[in-house]
Amino acid sequence: MSYLNEAFSLYLSRFHHILFITLVIGLPLQFGEYFLTVFVFVFFDYLGLTLIGTIGMFIVAGVGVILIQIPYIWIASHSIINEEVDLRYALLLFIKCFVPIGFLSTLYLTGVLPGTLLLIVPGIIFLTFAIFYPYVKIIDNLKGKKAIKKMFEISKNHCIQMILILIVFISANMLIWFGLSWTTMQFTTDLITFIILRMLLNVFMVPLFVFVMTLHYYEWSPQSFTRLET
Image (cartoon, rainbow, N blue to C red):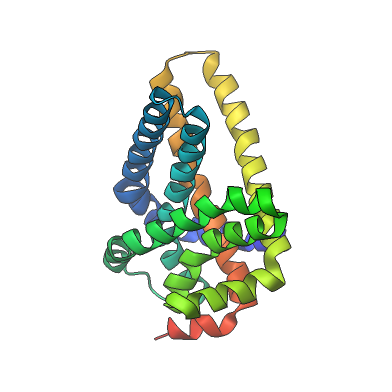
């Protein structure tokens, strides 16, 4: 709970930065992700490959959630060490990391299902790699074998803790969405309204998740943050 309290405090202190990133990156990316998930599902469903379309839809959605974290990780990591946040650099960082993080996250998430079907452990490893990679890339500035080694070390020691954090945030997101959608249904059933509300909930929940994860990352690998200090 102390991590959540500290994360929420940092979240509020940087809310103006979060709001800017949300308007410039978060919402446009959410719209793009929504249309791409629909396209992937409809395309494969048309070919009679509904299961593949469903899996592809979840992979695209997962990659979207990972990509949207990029500028928030930069904001959170600098907030923790009390450094000023350069929003221009956060935007440039998003552009710079969009392709490598998006590509590798797609590979890791694609490996989750077959890895889980073969053995549970490989699936979990692929999932933790997908979640940790943007933090290793942005905070440690690692890639290739060094990034894999770093992710494996963190996953080996903190995998269960990370999965629990993920479960808590997914559950909280679902509960909030249930209450929000039920309340909205009392006034309107317009699909566009529900889509926009869903996107707004996601883009404001994701930064809080990032702040919590970054605080834990700071505990798990404090030496990583020395690179960020001026």
